[in-house]
Length: 151
Image 1 (cartoon, rainbow, N blue to C red):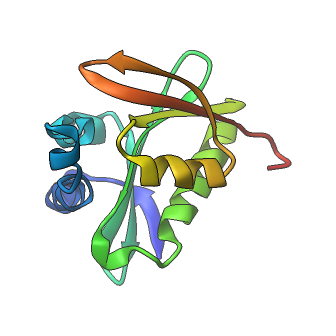
Image 2 (image 1 turned 45 degrees about the vertical axis):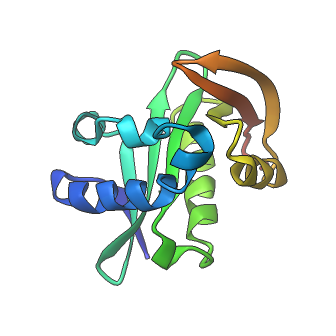
């Protein structure tokens, strides 16, 4: 397994992962989830995307965006072929380490309220819900996780 910054060469794999990870939610939400609408060319150019590669194949992605007082975990997604191997957990651990490396003591994320499976996973990993609101046309659940050298 290799965790590295995404390059333009990774764009087709990133788009495939996003399609597989989020298309099941279209029916539940009544529209494509936000990550399906994102501009990954710009995200890669801004060095906001990391990928996990296994045996030469991109199996997951992580989008991290610096904010004024926290690191935003904007997207984390695994290709179904790579789910259940602990790679998503490794990406989450990397996000925490990256927040500390960049000088942040807090990670934040948001997800759609209908993505109850994801909310449960985040909660199990120590994230706390901080609110719910309509944002950009989506009913979102906002979560945070305080990180320190001890976590």
